[in-house]
Image (cartoon, rainbow, N blue to C red; front, side, top):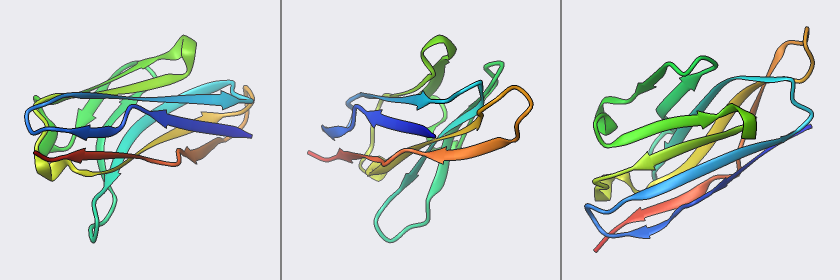
Length: 121
């Protein structure tokens, strides 16, 4: 089994910064893809940022230039640095990873439990 544990959420004023972390643990051969999603009240969950196994990244337009996703493969950890935060960034943020449990196994998708980010004055 694989567990993803997020941390780093909280309350921040508009224009402030937060750094989210998500660490995977358990039986892991390789993590191919990691992403951050968010879900605001009354809205659908959306992909915010993603990074593949070789470090190629992509972002939703609304966070480009403000958020940076990165990963530390040695620690099985993905980060989301969020700068210039806006009230509309308020949401529960979830990490997701596609994991190979063994060398020749299929990928399995895992989700973290979510961490609340609130941007308010």
